[in-house]
Length: 327
Image 1: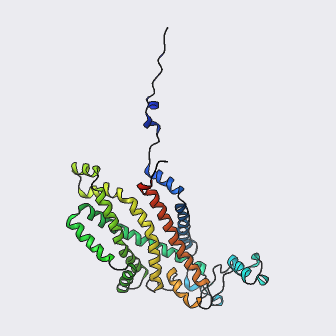
Image 2: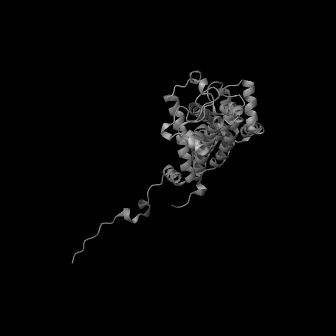
Image 3: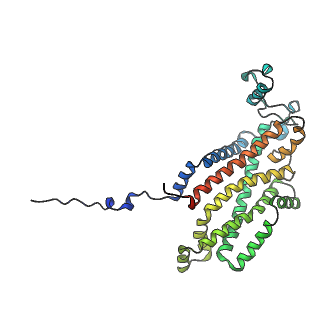
């Protein structure tokens, strides 16, 4: 009696071959999709980015041509005007289809459309926030990684300078820097970036100190890799996660500080729109009941800060290895 041998499949006997290949970034994206704060913050942030990109393209804004004195302090029309009419005087409020749509957010004291100015102001605030965070993240990461990896006197000198900057309240330091350099949007963005550099420097230093003890860094040193190559190829990539999270959270802070400088007259120059400057111009109208002049720029700032903060919280949860469990 003859028997036939069955072929042996190593793939079936090897448990590791049956597991899907792990991808850190795919796992991170999956965790982001499951995070409510990341979904809400991502949606708000996406709408803000799209608005800031599209509005300047489709609307060639000229603040001098936008002024219509006959529309001075006109209240919101369209949907908001209809809702306001239904709440205050429903009997004399026309139907929604019969209402005009010239000033959906109302007009300011110069008869300029608040909707158009808020759209362009969001673009300015977003650009200022991205520039400030990008500059602070770049400079702070270089300082922190260098100080943490090299240690010794380099660490002492760099970190003492960062401590001096941190000793000043960030907004007061930004105001002082702009007052010295001159009031302008560019100087305001640079001042906000300078105040945030120590945050990224200290974070990058902490990551560099932990990464430089790893085996792969020791192996790179043993084969003769230079300090610059090790920091660029090993220390920096393994320090990106917390820096990305802090950068996302820092966007909200940069938007608020840019708006604060504009509110004090140290940011974007008139008559070009900027959310903080719009809030400052609305103070006199708020006392006379012209609520729309302040409400809509304020809502825009709140949404920008809320969106970036929620997205940053979601990124932190998704990238933190201590919060990663088995799926």
